Image (cartoon, rainbow, N blue to C red):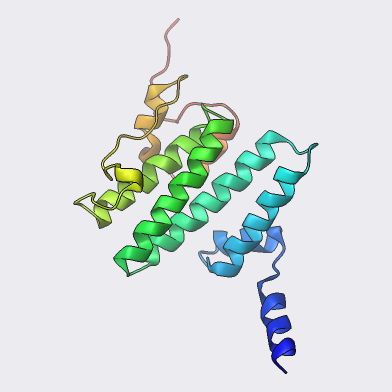
Length: 173
C-alpha cells in the first residue's frame, strides 16, 4: 500500500513544463509547478544542443514562480527564503544574458517586494541588504528605472523584441 501511495504522490507532481507554465500564469504556483520547471531547467542544462535563450527563459519562469509563491507566503522565514531563491535563479539568468530586460526587471521586483515585506533588510542573501539597488543593463539604464511603469506582459514582449519601454525618451533627428 505504501508503494502505491508514494507512486500516486510522485505522479501528482509530474506536470509537463507547459502545464506548469499555464498554472503559473493562472497564479496557481505550488511545489509541483516549481518541480516541473526545475526538471525542465535540468533537462536543458544537460542538453548540449539547448539554446541559451531557452535556458534563460526557464530561469526567468522559475524565478517569477518563486517570487509569486513568496508574495503569497505569510511566514517571514519562508518568504525570505523564497525571495532569496528567486533572486539567485534570476541572477543565474543574468549571468547568461547580462542585458536581458526581463531578468533585470524581475530582480528589481524581487528586491522591491522583499524590502516591502522585510523593511529591516536583515534577512538578505549572504548579508546583502534587501535595499540593494537592482542591476542595471549596460545597454540602457532607463529601462531598469522604468520597469514598473507598464504591465509585466507588455514589458516582457518589448524586452524580448529588444525594444525600450513605451515611456522611454525618443531620440530626435
